[in-house]
Image (cartoon, rainbow, N blue to C red):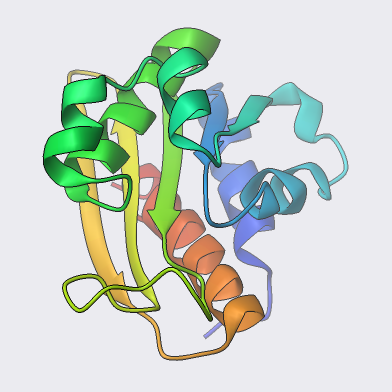
Length: 160
């Protein structure tokens, strides 16, 4: 195990490949972008990010289809996938990370409990991965766990 923060490792790998990254965040509220931009020199690879918290912003800014939101909901695998794909196209980045979930303590339903989160990554050659998580912390812990999961996914892909 290393003590080097995930955002530093991701930045090193991006810089090594000459790649760029962007984010499309809902429940994390910009935390992933914040962590990436806390690294000195991150302007070499971090292009930008969108906090698309409402369904309206998911549609208008990112171009998530209304049909996806109606059929599956904002917190779903298809929505996370569209967020990542559309952010990557919007920013013309090599990689895009997306996160949508229910940070809590409210907003849950029997089908979608607090802590349910989907993390997406879109990349070159039609690479698209979405992972589902179920966090059991409070709001702040769930947001932190989601940001960690997104950065870990980026690192996994960059280490391939």
